Image (cartoon, rainbow, N blue to C red; front, side, top):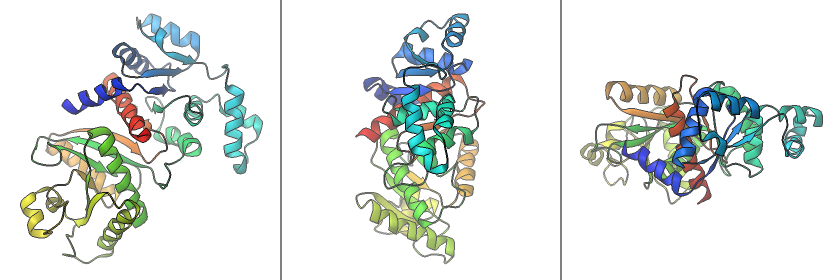
Length: 335
């Protein structure tokens, strides 16, 4: 895929520090070795130093020696990170002793490194659940200013170049928020636009999807999408966004012109925001399976710094690509 090549190229041009808390997981190590060899990112591995080096030697991974390896139990900044965690969590009842112990959890340590400015992004999930990956991220890194919703987008590479951006679209939310209200849906739209900019490198044209186009049907769920569009306009006046639009009105120029004349988005959308997780999850899987599209994600969006969750069935290539994607998100957040 041409876009993945572009994402990797952008990552190489502005190397970010990506922390991998599952530093003794074999697929992660193999991906890290290739990422270092190819110069995609500066890799930080969390794990027992001896164990990491032994695995690298046994697996003949020659480039792991160039990674920064942080032993979660013993490292120079352990007390500094513990103090930071205590300050962040003391209102929730955490004690200094508990903070010191918690910093030994690689998933918490990775987030504390990012919060302290010692890393730019994190990838985990090859051997941890989504909940375990997200919990410390939400407690420590938190969401980007003005956003309090984390959502999950997929980059969809379709075989229909006449739609989206030469066949590439962003679908959201497909992974996190079951039934967002209008305010949350507006935030998902704004975060998805940022994902389009940082990953696809295009000016987003956001369609707020519904089963109605411009009042063609009346229902409270339609009202939610209309209100979300209004709120998104208020939050980001410069954003090209319209709704409510049916999927065909959002994508097909002739249908868009007929159903929503004068719309700057109808028939031209490259970001599709679904009204519920149910619709988004079903939608991306239908396009993936019936349309033979490739889906990359979920890419978590709305965080103050990028943290991405892998499937526990992920491949080495999945980890490699997600590190490049995370690096692009980090670059985008700094611009």
